[in-house]
Image 1 (cartoon, one colour):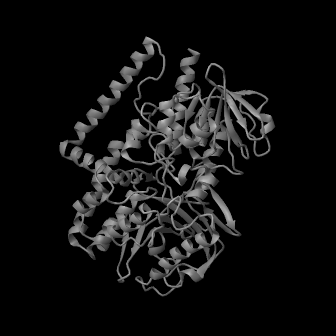
Image 2: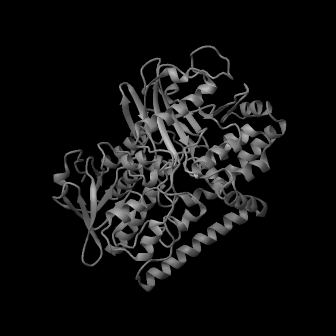
Image 3: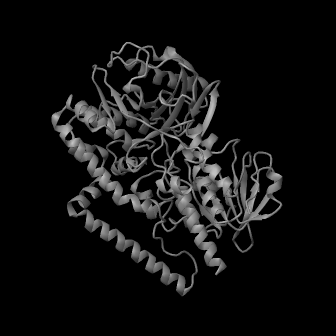
Length: 563
C-alpha cells in the first residue's frame, strides 16, 4: 500500500508510528537511499533541515528571475544504474550535453577548446603541439580503460570484515564474499595486463603533474586537464595521489558517453527532485524544515529513533545519516556511546576545504579577447567549463601555495560555467546565469575573516577583476551575486569544514579506509545506525552510489533479522 507523502509542517505526523527507517538529510544520497528502501516496501521518512530537498544538489532563485545551481553545478557521476532503476527520466530528469566541454583562454591571445568531438580536439591541440595531438586520444583511451576497471567497485559495498559478534554461518558467508570479491579483482587485473596495471598504480599514487608531464608537453593542455585533479581539494597538482582525483572525475558518463559532463535542465535541483519523486512514488515520506538534533539510543546501545529540534521524538530502529561523518558522530550521536578509537579517527579525518562558489546573474555573455568574435551571441567558448587563470600547472600550484600559507589565492583558479546557454529555463531572455567554482580559499584566512562583508567583497572583486583580464568589462555585466565560502558551505549545507566531498579524497580516505578503517560498509559501531552520504565509499560528487549501496546493506540486515 502506498502512503501519503508529507511536506514542511508535517513533523507532528511523524511521531504517530514507528518507522522502518529514518533518513537524516534530504540530499541526493539520502533521497536515493529512501527510494530503494521504500521500493522494498519499508516505511521510510526523510528528515531535511532546510526548506527544500537536495542538500548540495539544489536549485535556488536568489536573484529574481535567475535560478542557480547553488552548490554542485554539473552532472556526470550519477550512476546509470540509479537513473535506470529509479526511472529518473520519467520523473523529470533532462540532461543537456555540452560540446565542446571545456574552453581555456590565454592572455597571449591563444585558446584551447576540448570536448567529445575527436576532430575538434586534434585541431585544437595541434595549434600547440602535433605530438600532444597524437598523444591525447591514447591518454583518453587509457583513462577510459581504468574507469571501466574501477566501475564495478562503485556499485557495491567494500568487502569489509564483519564487525561485532556474529554467528559461524555469518562469518563463513563473509569470508566467502570477500574471497569472491578479491578473486574478481584479480581476474580483472590479469585481464588489464601488467603494463596497464603498472600505469594504473602509477596514476593512483602519483601527483597529477607527473602523470600529465609524462603524456604531454603543452602547458595549457596540462593545466586544463590538471584542474580535475585538484577540484574541491586543498591539494596541489604536485600532491601525491592527486592523480586519483583526476580519474574520479572521469568516471561518469552522460547517455553512455564516458567522461562527458552535462547541465541539468532546471539546474542541479532537478536531479534531487527526480530522485525525490521516485522515492515518493514508492511511498517514502519527505519532510522539510525538520532538523534532527540528536539520535535516540536505547539502554542496550541500539538506535531507536531521532529527536528533532522542535522536541519531536520520531521512532525507528534503523537510521541512515546523509550528514558528514563528523556531523553524525560528533554532533548527533550522544557522548560516551561510541568507542574512543573510532571517535578519534572521525575527529582527526581531513575535512579541510579550499573551495568558494560564486553564483552570478549577468545581463550579457562575457566576450573573451582571444576569440575576437565581436558579437553577443553564445559561441562554442560559452558552452563548456571555462578555465580562468589555468594556463600552466605552476599557476595552479602557486594558487594552492597561497592557501597553504593561510591566504586566499592571489590569482585564484576559476572554473566558470554558463548553463543558461543551453538551459533557457533558468534566466530571463537575453540574460544569463554564471557559476564560478573558485580555489583556493582557506576556511580561516590569516589576513581577515569571511564574516567581514568588506573582506568577502574584496575577494569577490579580485575574482571578477581576474576574469576581466580575459573578458574585458565582465564586471560591468553583473546584476547580482551569491557567494559561498567554506564557512558558508558548512553553515548552510552542513558540509564540515566546507568540504564538498564530506571529507578528503586522498588515498588514505578511500575504499576500505572511507570514512575510517574497519567501517567502510555503511554500518557503524552503533547498532541500527548507517551512513549513506559522500563521506562513505565511493566518495563525493553527485553520484548516488553511497545512498544506493547503503540501502542494499540495510535491506540485507533487515532480511537477516527477519530470518
